[in-house]
Image (cartoon, rainbow, N blue to C red; front, top):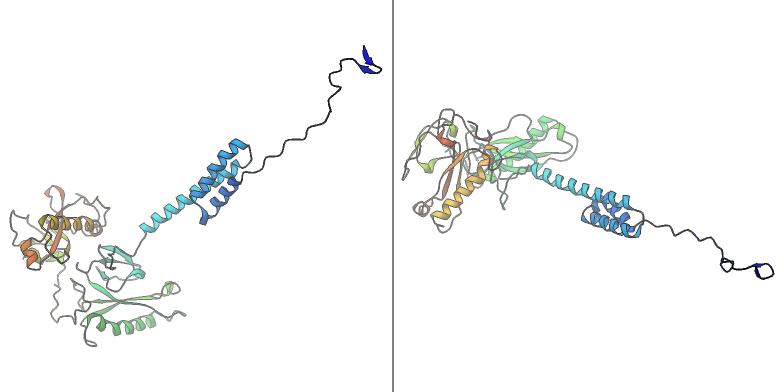
Length: 370
């Protein structure tokens, strides 16, 4: 049946316009994903922004279907990696710091190994180094020591002039400076000069000279000598090392390195008995220092100040991890009568747990081992 010539009756598609639909628009790359990758790759820009942009990109891609998920993940991974590397670098730098533990005025406050290139004028050195030296053991100047830095300077650039010429030049310079440092007439300081000078292997990078003074017989110094005038003809430094001194002494005369052979009695202590550290003893003195001048802070506060100093100083003396020395601490602190007599000294001593005897010097030997 038809409605008219040539037109089929009831054709359902007769009124439709047949066309092929265009493909859907191609999804682009999420901009935040690109930004995350860029921030993650460039170390200067690495950090929180790279991570934030990466997660923003992942969230937007999930909703829009755009490309860039791989870029966002890579940006997040790179940013995290740079952050981890940065933290590790900071920790390593702190661990390798070789400038010593210093107070606000730059003075050494704890025994520590210091790079020769980081020595400063006024630093005190525990023992005279020998041979090629990269580091020295620095100590507070109120602890016993053998040398004090009185000048540092850098030699002129140029070809290495030879070891003899370097030492001769350094000796002339240092010898001209020592008298002014101690406050003595020219040529009358009384101290010997010890040099730490550059060598050929390091000349291109390090031409620094450190001038140290020491007693001519290399006996110990017990205080800084800057401005104190010529060395006394009869040096107060004993010929014996502190760990070899024997006999009864007043607690006020104790010095770092003394070893005490008898247990402290109850009540007032008038004298203590010293013995060689190589033989059985009960205590070793590891710090003697003077509290700041001012009104007496009271016994409780003075006790706390000295104990705090001893706890802080012991790891450096032993070269042991903080809080893991294994030793017990004993200490003397000044009473009101001592303070009035201008005696503000605190004395720190170590002893073995369980009252066990010690049989050798503890300095630099690490935690206690029975």
